[in-house]
Image (cartoon, rainbow, N blue to C red; front, side, top):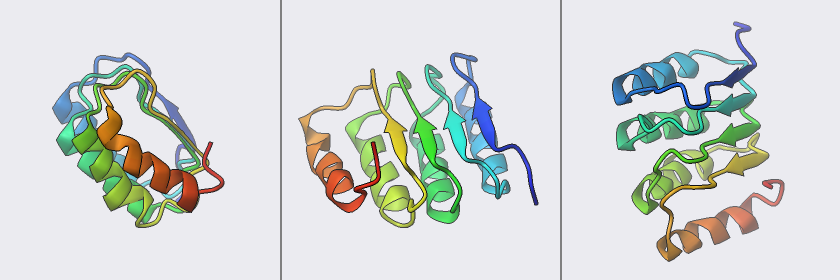
Length: 120
């Protein structure tokens, strides 16, 4: 099933329910390589959990941008532990700029740096 390979939806006012629907739809897409949903405040713990599922299942997603989505340390922990560490082999770049991450996320960042040497 070849579908969309790149999806950019920056500042599109995605709400929580819409973001969850998008994540579920992307789980059916076996071709997605680039996903940018930056500056959408609808990215919350539910959609991050679905995004983690997507990362755990996909072998194609290479670039993920989540700039300014209000991601917290708890959200980031979920993304790393349930998505990137589980599979995430294809992921090459991750942009988490302008989020609410604190020093509590340093262990996860360190893990990504050591485990995912290809991540930049």
